[in-house]
Amino acid sequence: MSTDYDAPRKNEDELVNEPLQALKETRPTSQSTVVDEAETTEEFELPGADLSGEELTVQVIPAQPDEFTCASCFLVRHRSQIARQHNQHRYCTDCEA
Image (cartoon, rainbow, N blue to C red; front, side):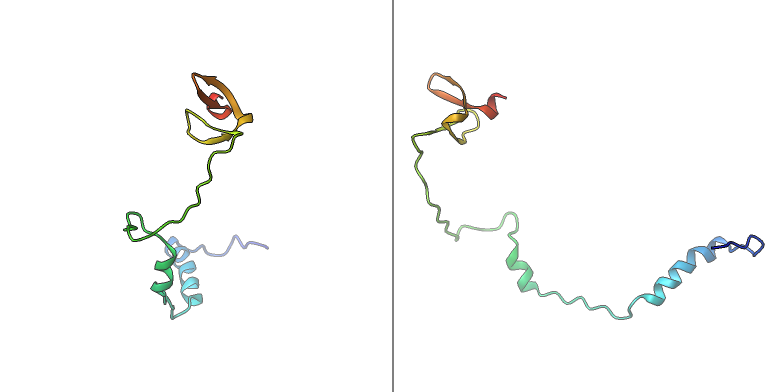
């Protein structure tokens, strides 16, 4: 692309308004912003929402013989992850690292 350096220069107002005019010409005249509120509100839980009427069903599995509960992070870990044992308290490798 060649540039004609002898052509008169455009002033700053013309440079600023030129891209704006091009955008205005290509912009659609009508915009449709119809939002179905019923769909959007059911998908998200708001913080602080009242969940007192909700019931949770969780199946609790008892601790297995090859598992222990870490005395530091209180996570149930496999026996192979015991890093240290002190007075019947066991600590996992993640907490000792």
